[in-house]
Length: 205
Image 1 (tube, rainbow, N blue to C red):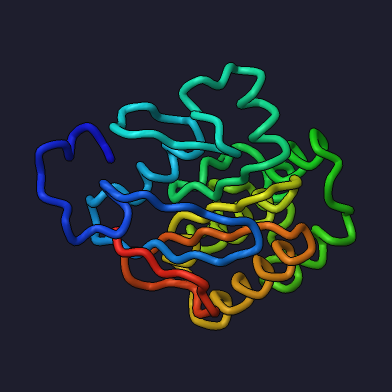
Image 2: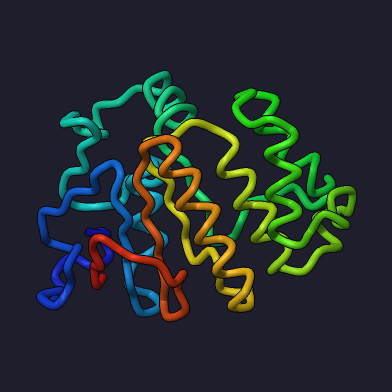
C-alpha cells in the first residue's frame, strides 16, 4: 500500500493489505474512489514509483531487486501501460506519437495501426498535432500506442473517461482482441465509468 496510507484503516479494500495476483489471460477491473491510490498502484507495478509498503512480485521475483536492464526488458516485452495522463508529445502528430514506439518495437504493421485509427474514428486526425486534439481523441491515440509492443499484461488507467459509449465499446473490443492474440492479461482501472466487458475478477480499492 502507499506509504502515505500507512496507519489508515483499509479493511474494506480488496487490494491494500491483501495478497492478490494478476494472471495472464484474465481480465481484471480495479474500481476505486478518487484519491484511493488507483494510479499509484499502476505506477508501483510498472516500477515507476517505489513509495509503497509491502512486496510486488513479477514471476516470483521481488521487483525491488530488479536492475535498470531488467526493467527495460520488462517494459519492452511484458508490461504495457496506458497512463491516465496519457504522456503523449503535444508537438508531434498522432501518428508520430505512435511511430516513435512502433519503430522501436517493430511489433505492429502499419496496416494494423491504420485499422485501429479507422475503428476508433480518428483516421482524419493522423497528421494532427496531439496538442490540437481533444482529450478523448488523445485517449484513443494513447491506446494504439500502448498496443504497439508485446506484453503479458496491459494496464489501462481510466482509458475511457472522456469517451462516449460507442467508442468505449470499441476500445474494449480492441483490447480483448489484442490480449487474446498475445495470451495476455488486461487490468482496467476506474473511478466510475468503465469498459463494459466480462471481467474475471473485480477488485475494490
